[in-house]
Amino acid sequence: MTFLKNCSIIKVTKKGSDLLETYYSLHNHTCSSNQRLIDSINKVDELLQRAFDLGLKGLAFTEHETVNSHIKALKYIEKMRQKDERWNDFKLILGNEIYLCRNGLNSENYNGKKDYFYHFVLLAKDEEGHRQLRQLSTRAYSHSFMKSKMRRVPTYYSDLEEIIKPNPGHVIASTACIGGYFGKSFLRAKENDTIDETVERLTMWVEYLQSIFGKENFFLELQPSNNKDQIFVNEWLIKFSQKLNVPAIVTTDSHYLRKEDRRIHKIYLNSKDGDREVDEFYATTYLMSPEEIHSYMDKQLGEEVVNQLLKNTFLIGDQIKQYDLRKPFKLPYLPDVEDIKLAKQPFSLNSSNLQLAPIWYKFMTSPEDSDKVFIHRILKKCYSNPNHFFTQQRLDRMQVELETIWNASQKQNIVWSKYFLQVADYIKVAWEDGDTIVGAGRGSGVGFYINYLLDIIQIDPLMEKVPLYFWRFLNPDRASILD
Image (tube, rainbow, N blue to C red; front, side, top):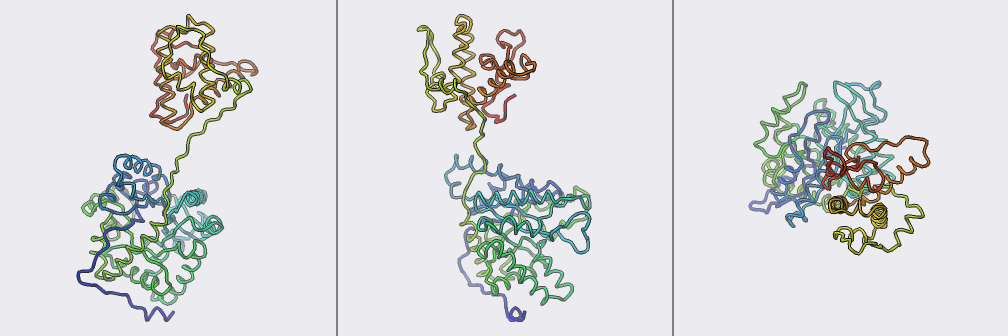
């Protein structure tokens, strides 16, 4: 590979040249990366806030083989966008740092001298890309095994071929830190004096991965550091970038927020037994401004080169679409013929003296058929004994519970009337057609008066001497299947 022998690193620094004011931070960790080995002291909201305060264009979450910080990040971004419209210009990027290994690696054939769990960063461009990340993560855990008191979660190259290659263009890949295949290969080559052989092998490796992700979706990743190993790998990454025309980016692989947090992070890593490096590599793994990145890298690479690395993060960030992983909670509801008819029937209030609260009419005029059927069934029960059910005490309780159901439906984007109707139908089948015994009620559901009106329970909570609180059953701020 003689063409690389003639490749020099550009080290041009223009006096007074403009530094890039912002960039996309594309490799970051939080406490969600601590599942198998303690790793980061960042919290999701604090990391996002720090990136926003630094004026960054966006930030990626790339935990160690997990995507469990993504929903927290989405919720925080949504909350902040409601408070401050400037957050609308800040982009959230969802990714995963996987462990790329040879096909078939498992506990039986693992060779500690030859097998490595190479770090590799994946970033989802869109919802389909995130689905592919989840598929890969699921496979990694299906391959997992315990080794050296730690669960290993390998992603095989065949997994990338089977999940990414048939439908490319939704996931962006980068070579990660010096714990990646590129970094470890060159550090071994430096030690064993096998650079030319390693260059040839890595060239084929890059071309192979480009064939899976697409050339435009594969990047070489440099990191700011005073670590000699990282500087050595950075120089070779630049050579590859120039000669193979593969774009290179810079990331900070953030494990803590600020430079002054390094000591706390080191103490945290040392709090658990284990043989691991806690100094050199982690000395610069914090979220940086562009100026801080230049302060570490300009001396080795030159200001122009570092500026280009920062600019190249836009090649990734600008491709990322904003999407929401959260889906409306869908409740099963199978209306029978009678319910279908009820939904079309007008409401007839038999008592002219009956004064219903406005909440009743929200259900009556709702676009959801289940809301209308829900009220029809409640009124039917009440009209079976008007003097008993239409007392002020009971109307007040119905109003409060109806408002609770309505507010929960609006806030959680769940049509809760479907749940009540479906459960009532199940109970009816159990009573009339099932060879079973139906209890009078259970749990917090016994405290909800609407359940009694729908014959879900046979205990009238307003007749009990022991207080039964309706709010234990349904809370608009708690989205979960009811008791």
